[in-house]
Image (cartoon, rainbow, N blue to C red; front, side):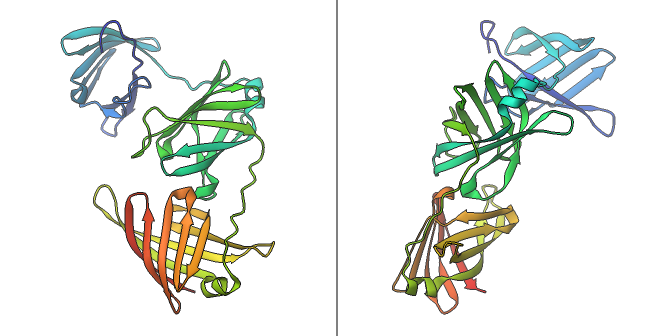
Length: 314
C-alpha cells in the first residue's frame, strides 16, 4: 500500500455480549485482505481505534454523522481513510425486470465442465433475490448476497461456497467471471456466459448391455471415509442408483444425503468381467469396483484423492 494506490477497505463492526466491539477487515481490491480480524477495537464516545497485527497496521478515526474520518497507519506511513456506513444497493424496477427469471450457461473449471444456473425473482418487499445451482452436482440452490446491478454490470456473492460473480449484461446475455476460493481454482477467475431461459438437463444414457444392467441395477449404499484438509476424519454416506428412466433408458445417479446433494448424474458406466467403472464428470469423480454378490468393493477417486468405498445393494 502506498500513497499513489487507491484501495477500498471494508470494516465490519460487531458488538459483543460484554459491550465491547470486534471488527473484521476486507478489501474487494486485494485478495490478501479477506476476513482479517482486528486484534483490538476501542470505541470511546466518538473516537474509534483498531489494531490489526496481521497487516501490521492500525486505524484511528472520529465518528462524524454517518462516517468515520481518520487515518490508516502501516509501515511508517499515515494514509487518510474515511469510512462510510454501507447500505445495500436497491435495484430499480427496470433492473429487476431485466434480471428476473432463469439464466444458464457453461463454466469450465479445473474439475471439468459444469453448468451454472442463476435464478432471480423479487420477494414480497419487491427486492431481488437470487440463487445459484450447478445441476451436475445436484439440485441444491445456493443463495446470493450483495446483489448489485449498476450500468449493466451485475455482481453478487455466494457465501456458502466462498464465490463471487461479476459480469456485464449486453445483447440479452450475461458475460462475466466466476471466482471461488477453493484449491486449484484460478485466482483471476473463470469465464462464464449465460443466456436467459430454463435449463434442460441432458440425459446421460448408460451404455450397458441388458445382462450388465441386470447385474448392477438397483440401489446401493456405502460410506466414504475421508480426511478433511484440517486432518479431521469425516464419514460421508453415498447412495448409488442405477435404474431406467421414463423412456426406458439406463441411467445412474449418486446422492450424498449429509451434503444435501441429490441426483448427481453418472455420465459413463462400463461393466466387464465383474468390474464396474462409473464416471461422474460433474464432480470430477470416478468409482472402480469389483462385484461379488450384493457387494461392490472398490475405490472412489475425486480430484487427486482416492479412498476405499464398499457399497451394498439394498
